[in-house]
Image 1: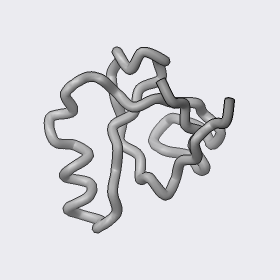
Image 2 (image 1 turned 90 degrees about the horizontal axis):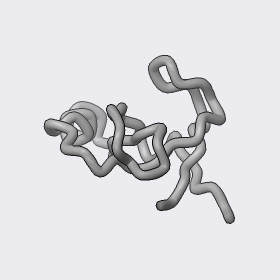
Image 3 (image 1 turned 120 degrees about the vertical axis):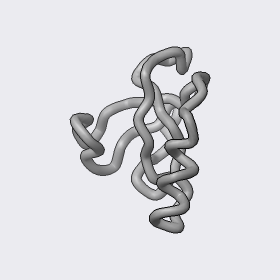
Image 4 (image 1 turned 30 degrees about the vertical axis):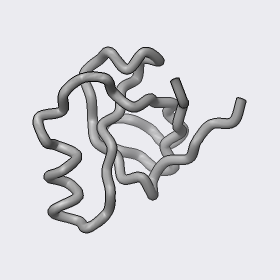
Length: 67
């Protein structure tokens, strides 16, 4: 699964935190954030298999980790 690094703090997750797209249903949270901000958001997990509680992050606030 592709890893992403946070480019700035999001909730309790520090800048530089590595996260992954969640495989769980997010109850529309990312969609709600997009609706409110006009910026695409993804629901992210701290587990590499995406199987964890999630938090939303703007796609502009993440960078794909190489390798």
